[in-house]
Image 1 (cartoon, rainbow, N blue to C red):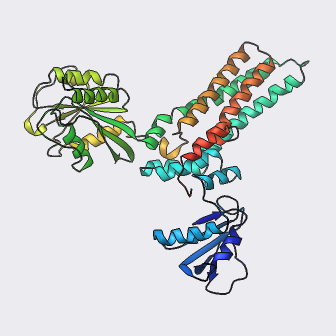
Image 2 (spheres, rainbow, N blue to C red; image 1 turned 135 degrees about the horizontal axis):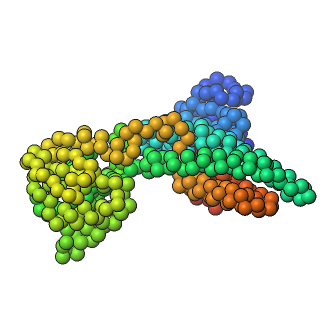
Image 3 (tube, rainbow, N blue to C red; image 1 turned 60 degrees about the vertical axis):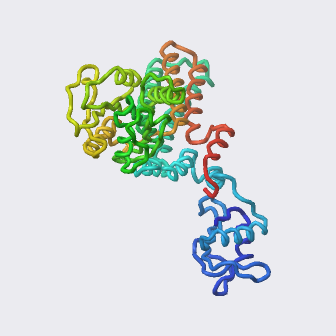
Length: 434
């Protein structure tokens, strides 16, 4: 249990009885004793710590009570603390205070919740690097370069009688062109970062009875979906989580794609087609023991334009020769029922997602948050307009405005210029106690 604020030490002294006489708490030490009510009733044996600000998570005085984990004990100790005046923290309030008190910038604060929610080792590593300030340092470096150019432009605004010399303009345009390249390089990491953060959406698609649900079960290693020989068994989407090669996946099994008069099944088919349009990767499943038919072509057309792996199922029953358009797709033969070929399919999924040989997610600065991407896009737009106007001989006032807007856009990533309503939405995502 954590208490943060100017009265943290006072509250702790009021309810804690140490095993040895204690005049004052030494910061950052653990003390053994009991939590006792004002009537002398012992509630629990505990370890407590007091951390004097600013050497704490929130940079305020912080008291921590390490008690036993039973819900009754925790509630009793919590009630005792609340009787002394503290209130319950709002979601993310401890991290919000750390941000407001300058211990973390906004990008680092957001990384806290991403670290908690991470579903793979790679996602946790990405969040930890952001929490340690990797992204923030990169953004601050870009901001300093823009600020240096802004200072030079505003010098000419303050002294309008001085014309900007051509070599100075050329240097400014070259410097900001370099910043644009750095911004674009960071933007290029968004897709891989987003996948690590949100998970790769993998849709299992095909006509009825080709083994889609069996494939889902084989990939998961458990019987998650109902498998029967009756066409149309799956009528809605089934979504499950899986991690392959450090990449989190959202596997989605769908209704078999076919023309049907059944209104329930028809809705399932509609949802399958809608999911196909937004999936990061489609596993198009066909029965490899028979030639593809019109329903297979319907499923093929549904995944048009999306990255697709053709899963040729029922390899144990023999394989027929595939004609166009199926033979043009990346192909993996499997037997979902016997779980053969599944490892090869897993490897193909990771490679198709683009993570087979990537190293930037482990070594470089990567963005994974859509808010950060929007800020970088805004910065790039402003810098592009600055370069265009500079080449066209615009006055220093207009050039200055574009650089100011570019700086403000970058400031939204680290929190210097983030509106209050955005801050509220960010910290509402946190759980209580973080």
